Image (cartoon, rainbow, N blue to C red):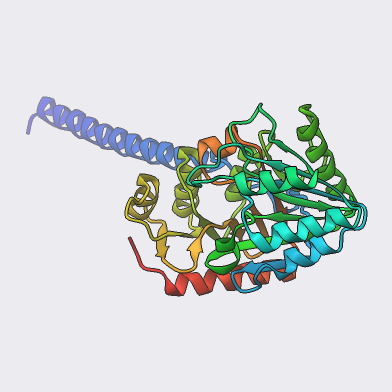
Length: 349
């Protein structure tokens, strides 16, 4: 081979080596970029807030319906000595109406806030409205600033309160899954009493206790944060699940490894959001009995929401609703036991 040919071959070899080195370098850079992008996405992904961020309400006692019946509510009404304030979406249960009448007759100042046009109730609250008028007991419709007065709260003597998922109806105590929390901590009871007073007087009040979940004040933010805080498990029981942001939060939790289970009522017209959850990997079961009227979320077995707030835009953003977040161990155990019982009896959509 001539000197010229040998030199040319050397040049070609050098070019091939350089080309290979450049290709390898480009691959390495691309791989590094992918890794960096993945790491960056992990850094930028919304982190679950620590459990300590949730200031909770101490629950003195939790009752589960229909297991415990109306007796706990009846006892609390019967225990009133000075004042009894009832804010209720639907109040038709005859034994409890009679208990309120007895409270008034023994000198208790009774006030009742009612929803003017409850959905799905043929006679609405007409019966109790007439009875209250006959007895001279003060009652009003809820604050007109809200689409529906859907809360379920009873404040007794300004010292204790019931925060409930249930209306005061016969079905609430005989055929529905419901939760009733007794609250006696002074700050929360003062807040609940002040909230009732504001609605009674058609004024406004923002609760100071961060453990209370109130529409329209903080319910959407509090419930989204609660779902987002889950590290291991979410158990959600709901009559209504029709809010896109709540649905996305549940799906996001499932995709980051949280076991998400949802219980909804067995109905012919299943909400599209419930079907979407099932298709997105969230485990869903439909329960025929007891009827799933409860509104509850249990997170990691460590904290839970319960109250009147349904998981719908109207309930979160337009209604007057009241609930609470608790970390009381005895309450969490009862919520979990009821959920597991319903889960075992449910069927997949």
